[in-house]
Amino acid sequence: MKLPGESRAAAIFSGRLRSALVLLILVFCSGNAIAADRTVVVVLFDGFAPSMMSAAATPNFDRIRREGVWSDHLVPVFPTVSFPNHTTFATGCWPARHGIVGNVFFDPERGKYLYSRDADWLTECETMWQAAERQGARSAVFGFIARKSETRGALASRIDTQTRWEKRGSDMARARKALRLLKKPQAVRPALIALYLKGPDKVAHFNGTLAPETLAAVEESDDVVGMLMDAIAALPPDRATSLVIGTDHGMMDVGPLVNIGRIVNRHDIKGHIAAFGASTYFYLDKDESADRVAKALSGYGDIFTLYRKGEYPAYAHIGGSRSGDLMIVARPPYWIEGPEALPDYAELLGIASFWPSTFTPLIGGAKATHGYDPNIPDMHGIFYAWGSGIAVGREIEKLDMIDIHPTVMALLGLEPGKPVDGKIVKEVLAQEADE
Image 1 (cartoon, rainbow, N blue to C red):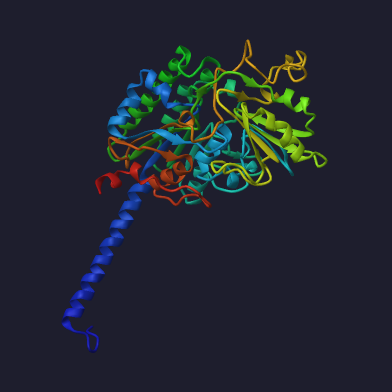
Image 2 (image 1 turned 90 degrees about the vertical axis):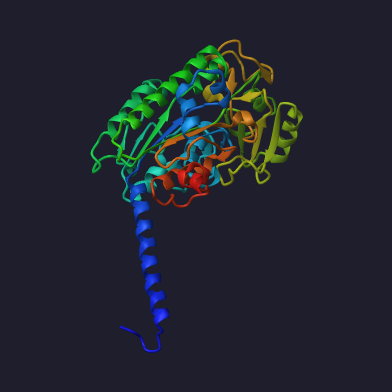
């Protein structure tokens, strides 16, 4: 029906506008439907430094360089150790927001955190599997921390049992479990399959970044990647599947150990310490003076850098009540570990009582570690992506750990978790390459 006063030209324009809007809606819905049907396999290797890749034979990673997206500079969050970065990888949040500020720390209400996988320790932020499940997308999670809550149970449609490191079996065995899920009918097949794999981390700690044992572990990781790629390539043409691979941190070769227990005893520092990798938090007793302790520790400037709470460096997004009154960060090649990492006989040997402030362990010490300033290139890790929705033959100069979560959620056609600090890395996505 023609409206009063409406010209013929206006009516034609109005009709064309409605048609264009309908077309745009159809295109938008079609794009989301394609993304929603996509399966994204996410792999987090532990302790995978780019330097290891350069020295090993990695034909499958090399293939991704040709056919997908890659970077030698996935920048971890500080502390550049496993548990804060596992959590940031999964949530897209800084440690100050998700609350996992170290492998070890103290919470004023909950007490000591010690390598816990319980999602109840998170103070904020959704993991990618929680965000996916909330939006109706099934997920399966193997090995990751925060896949289960002690009070809420499993946080994904499928999770594996939480076992100690030495009982987890091989990375290849865990990856094969994921492959079985790829073959499930769409009605029960997860949209997101997240795998944490041991990678070369532990081997590199005790042998060095470029030791033959470490390079062998890298090549085993490459075999796992090849198996995943072959399985994805063998799927029917209508089965859109992406593979996203990252690591929690890099690694560098190190020298003397900072004997933090001896330093605490020498200066009679009252309180608790949480030491890991290259950092230590000091949680001082109420009657202990931060000024006194800071003055005592200032004499070790050639070994570590001292920071007061509220004056942490810009790279340390770790505020809140869980970070210490003071923090020290080792200067490479020095490294730090707390009493949890020392052997049972350390106390009998008097290591914290009369040994020097730094020493190189004769046996059992680390040859390589991490935990330093994330701006140090050796702390950077690898990032690789391949398959449906991924750009081809593109190197990304640098990307941040907080950006992995929103990028994975974009591949799934879903909104990121709430809240989130990261952003979508558009260079990863195929449509960015086509523009």
